[in-house]
Length: 364
Image (tube, rainbow, N blue to C red):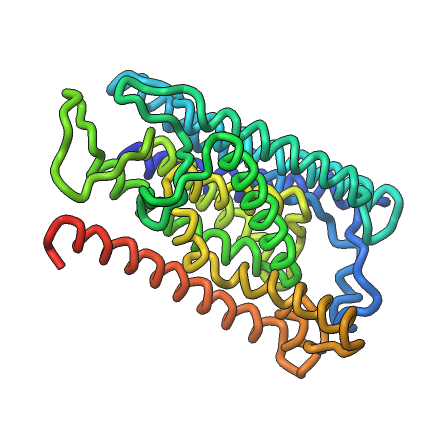
């Protein structure tokens, strides 16, 4: 628990202190965010707001993790783990793709950055290399960071993808979640606040998995209800650092935002939650924990399908949060209510996780 607290506090502090510097740097002429002309007219006044603020979240995540590792080395020994480094690689790699996308947007003064092909190649390369790496690095108990079995709160023994299938599924999940968080990033503070709740939920899940690991320090098998997850404490530390970074960034990103996270932050956070679900064996549970992101992405899909097939617009505008703005809701009203939905989704996901643990131990 000490390491988790250290990571969260350092991540929070770094994001709060670093973001004003980024605001100053990215406020230079030619670095402002472009705004869609077909969106809510109230958003046009945001044109020119500095972007790429997700850089602060990524740096805060690394700083929080580094502080926790140093603390661990000084007190108990140990160091970085394969799971932790893979997760950092995934989030940072996708953040870099997003950074390039943001940079092209602001330098060319348009709302489109990397072309679809380049963005797809970048995301796919990061996701595939992460998936391959997740099947290596066995520890003393024979566990790899990833598993070829689909998972709910633990592995479903009747459904295995095999090594190649796992890499393909991992890449699809990472692409889906990174784009889902990207779609959600349309209101001041919406993506940062919602992501902090989903990631915070994973802090608890990872800590429970650490306390109920199937293999203890002596190498013997623990009681029923244990979890076959490699390095859950390290995953909890990274999640805590990232959650702290989101909250620290939110201090400056809340309405009216002084800086946007951009694709730099949204792709990194989407990759982070996808990576956490894969490495903790909870891919299906993330659908509940991140249900708000799922709805946002589905609203875009429904809008596109409806227009392509029937020439109708199901929503006034997609993603979903803009529909309510165009319906007359104030931006802050949409924001707070969506935050509440994100919190309820996280609580429901955590409740399902705990209920399954109780039933597996004979306590429920």
